[in-house]
Image (cartoon, rainbow, N blue to C red; front, side, top):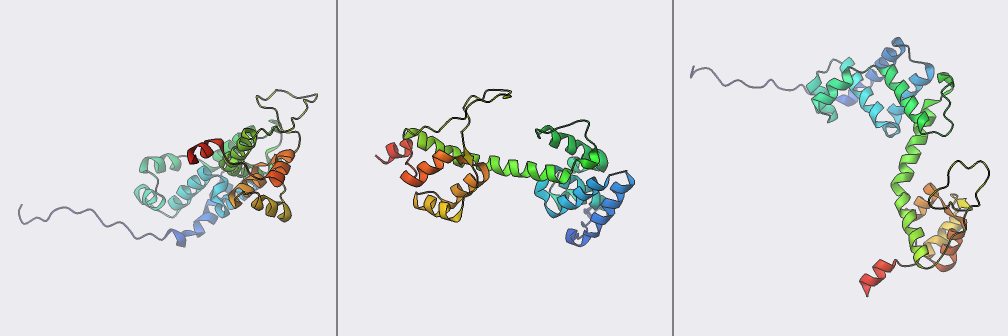
Length: 233
């Protein structure tokens, strides 16, 4: 027994995921065999070029295509950073139903949802891009909210939108009467002179701000927050 060496774990194969781009085409062929529509096959290419469109679909596609390449669960987990349990769960999913589920969830977030609409007319990649834009806007919305709060602390009151016929609900905070998103280079220069950072200007382009609030910033500058002014004193 003393002469028998200690058992050793077999060496993990050296994997080069970048060299497995061919698996994307194999993945599209597998989805085609499952009955995926032309629009759904286009989504695979869109997610391949821009994984941020749907991180969940990109994870599913990555696991599926690495499985096509013959990688084991532990190897896929090591290459992707996912847990082996998560990899096993994704391996059991089918591509076409996953695309259809993403389609339904995207439509539920869209005001124009029509359950009777044909799937071929859905343009799923456009819905994914719209969801990405909403996610990016939500990430910077707090910057615009902070600007509006500082204007309100100075006593500024924006013009409210007049309720119109057909409104289905009354928001807790009245909407702005005129909201702008387009910031020209001349306006951006005025906003920089008013004390706004590049990040704040880009947030306004993404989320929008009231026209009268924009004019107030250009004319009187960005006011200092009351809390920060108290801290300085």
